[in-house]
Image (cartoon, rainbow, N blue to C red; front, side):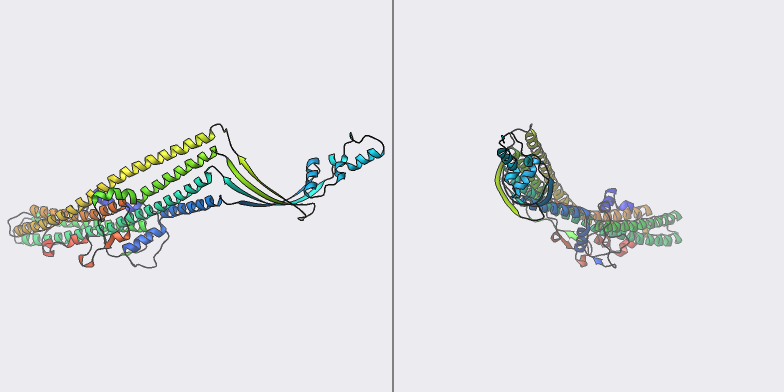
Length: 499
């Protein structure tokens, strides 16, 4: 079978095998899994999609955090203190509403007056050397930012843009997963089509051995023809084994893409085909710029970078906030003495050694980097749309050409085989005609697979690769690739040999 499939074609069949690791889904028994169900399985356990969804949750939490920063911040605290520090001990007594004149040394003052001395030079012992004071403090404090120079608004805008970017990334990841699932799913049918070609080649080789053996016994052909036909039969048997291995590898690749254990049997539903996107091809590039989720994600990231600049610039402006506080102070465990404090404060950093300026420059440079990435991605996307469209059209034209080539090769093989049976032609001519027929069938299979995948690539670039863009191939028409193996009459195939 190696002559039926190019190296590139074999690589396409196995491309999905290196994309994702095995997941945790196990089907209870072998059951039919159509393409829609296969995509659902892949989406439920793909690690890339799980990571993107975690990013969405992070962005949602960031929005809630930024919105919460606009609200008052309320803290509750409780503490106990014991001190004989002169200043703190007197302050605690004042907070507890227990200060007396004696705390100021009134007794020492009066004693000096009563004895006729001068009280002014006397140091009040109760004030300078107080006894230890116990204090139980309970505090409720609320702080509210009034003006932050646009920092809080910048944080909120940045979080919202990152959420939109994560949502676009989620859509992009889902479409990428669907593309790889389609590649693996269609790869199984393509491998089965090549297996069908190998089966027809085996039937032809067996029929050829029978025909040549009959002619040899009649003395019409020499023994070397019979030996050549027998060698070819063994070669075709090897090719059939290779085709079976190809189908097994394609099925393994599908298991990996779906995250299903390799030992789990899967019965595929009908083959699927992808419709060309509607609209005018001349307008598709513009539509892709608007709808492609990867481009949208970059655009939202660019908006977030702009908000990051606003956050950095906010440090150039004053910060204004309000505060309200309620305290209780008690020498014992209680709430006896109450007090409150309200106020507002303005902070303005007038010089920070260029820290704010450098932070703004860094944010601006990051935005310029994202702008360049966006421009590059847009340029590449435009090229991808045009390239995928051209390849899809070319593949469709190739299908028509290959179908014609198969019919021509069938007729040529029929004529050459008849000439050989009549003793006019040679076995080399028969095998050459069969080689052309087998190649034509293989080329038709690859062309039909290319139509499916290039249309999918076009829709992926346009941001429109959804399940609605696919449809099962009608059962009467069989698979678009399997149909290639059944296009020739059985009698014609049986009378010819595969090279």
